[in-house]
Length: 516
Image (cartoon, rainbow, N blue to C red; front, side, top):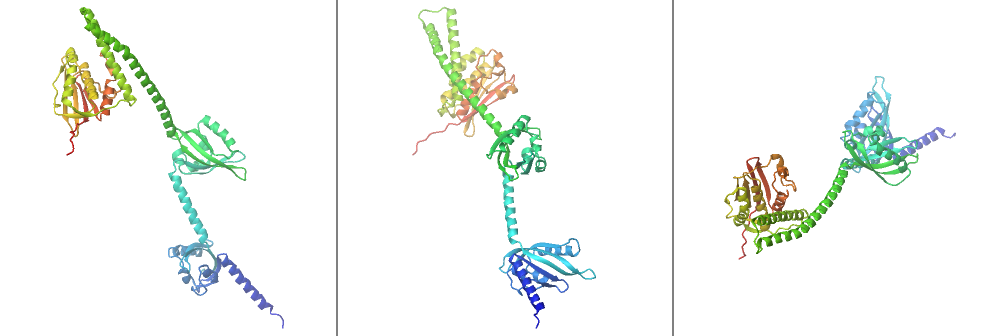
């Protein structure tokens, strides 16, 4: 008998077909055909194998296949088929989740085409492929998560992340720039990536020339570069920018910098302010040291002058009236100068933080009485009446006795000096909640509203330097500093031509009791 060539050929073809299908399944892909009239799927061995099923475990029709498609993905899958059947797209393509036999969900990519039509235009037969793309979709999901994390980081980073590429022929481009460039540079990513020179044109001319020259040198280096330059922001301001970048040379000869850019204008201003503060602090220390030395140097000869003046007044040999008047002027002037030197010393100690406060409970009435007695001669000469103290007899304050006396004497002295003949000075006190209010009230010349903010500044006598009234301009500055050091505060109200009220609030004194 002749050899059965037809049977051998058919067996070979079937074997090749089986091997092809097995190879496709091994590669994660299967081939199928769909008889749409009978709703019969053929070649499904590979398709069901992708999901771990054996042949016959799933019905070989579209309705059976739909049972493994994720419910959320079925509508999109069917819509893609209908668009192809209506001729809106040349091929059917769909990616969807399908349930594996082990209960997990796998991502499948399906592509197909209608290859036969009935005479009336209805689709008859469709063929296609099915591939397992789970790993690709997982990789895409992981990449999307990484991208989202990167986007989150870039949204919270105050500066701009960027890439800058320089080609061998001198062309430049910005392949990537973060959205923060809108806030920092006033330019959109599209503007910068569309024209790399858009930002460079806004750099101050001298800085731009230096930067462009430096870029060529940096292209030959692998080191991280840091530079600062001035930038004309679109809002009209001149800003300082700092860029830090690392270069990497590519096989194509280009150099790609990965960099970070931030606005350091505020930092530079802060550094400038710090430098100015250091300079001012050094100047203040030098001034304080000078005033301290000068004050001490002046006190030594001045004490000698005052001592000799007192000896002359006590001399057994009587002085004439004119001589006694002159010696009195020497003594009074010396005492005034000594008070001024004392004020300077207090001011320098306060500025240097070297003035200490020793707080104690103080009966306010007796202390105010002593101060009024001390000011009585000055008030009498000025024709100013010192009114009786109001409300202080039963009050106690927590303060340094010496420094509180200095505060009260300074306020009373000013109330007398800047008063008018026939005027008066009142001192009143009243308790507050845990505090005591002390007021010195005069009906003198008053203080202009524009001068009130500078009233407690040192060496500022406002308009009084032309009044003929002696003073250094630091008495009220010292007064406020002492009040603050004692835990209090001082305020002033004044009307020109009517008078002024200085209000000092101090902590109230408290009773000490022994434990029983």
